[in-house]
Image (cartoon, rainbow, N blue to C red; front, side, top):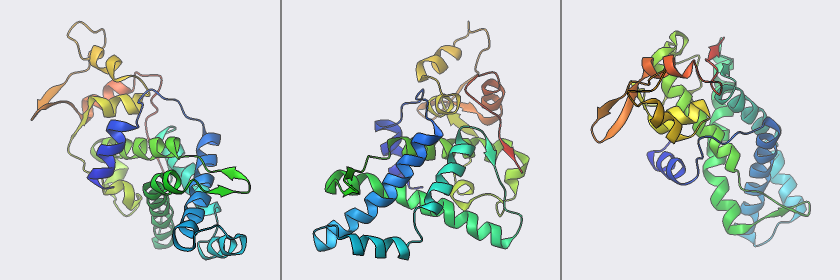
Length: 230
């Protein structure tokens, strides 16, 4: 995922303590898919013609793969469950699904904001929760790449996740995302008087937490589930 995307959404749209449900995410995935198709038609021919919309849908294999990828992303980000690829065919399918979801999320907000497409008489919603879940998954991958033994096999992990920069530490905001809590609560936990102190250090101009310490501390938080990859 591009640095531009991470910085834009991390600073402007991500509320670390926000709780998201799977039904909401799947609805947003559906809206992002159809909204992007509708916006493409409005962009190039000026209107959404039903037969052309159906033609694009057939060309792109429909919304089902997108919803499946959104379900997998939610399951990993929130529930810590990730199905690893066991052979080349599974690896290709896995990478295609995650790549399709990431590409859609990158383009859906500007498409929907600019063109406000209406499909079936309903205006498509911005994929705010979908953006959050994708970012959440990327942050979890940063932690898992440094601490989870099964993430050593890059071929088994979605390329979208294994390509993250495992720098060995997380920021306080990233820890807040994983714990589904406020950044202020994380900062308070880093105080010397905190009961279960989160130990931090300085990395250039920011306060960070080494990956092992981040995992130790997160294990004691109700909003965090340790990753199970199989």
